[in-house]
Length: 207
Image (cartoon, rainbow, N blue to C red; front, side, top):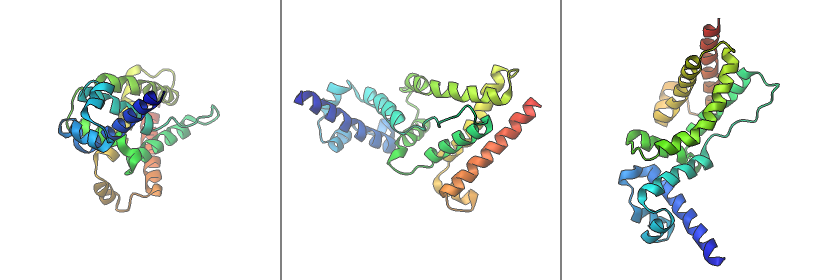
């Protein structure tokens, strides 16, 4: 039993170190020896628990996603879809702007965007698909039953890309464009703007 607990602890330490170092350096520049040094273990532990550096990278992505990804907001059937969309947008922006330890997934995501590995494509689709389906269901409520599948997908891309600007731009650049510090109040105001902007487009499509 003690050995099993030690094994779980070692695996968790390796994943924590991998999330941090892959997020800082990307897959290619991160060294397994550096990850092991930070985790306080040896290279053999990576081979034992994960099999390879590539497998560790994929598992670090999954770990960071499950730990840090924006949770689906609690929704009531009595809440109008416009209010639910606003809350989803706000939670996405809040996560994208997180500069602390809970922003590990975003840093991994940025590194993968800058230097694609192809290693996480299948895993990423599997992780994100349930959230996409929920978001698309909400958009269908807003667009109405006559909306085509293409219209739903295009609206999804439009809203997500507005939010992704908060990932791609550096914090200093965001504050330059906003002409103010990126406070929680500023994030809430941007979420309100994106929601109003998106709803205006959706209403135009419906009308």
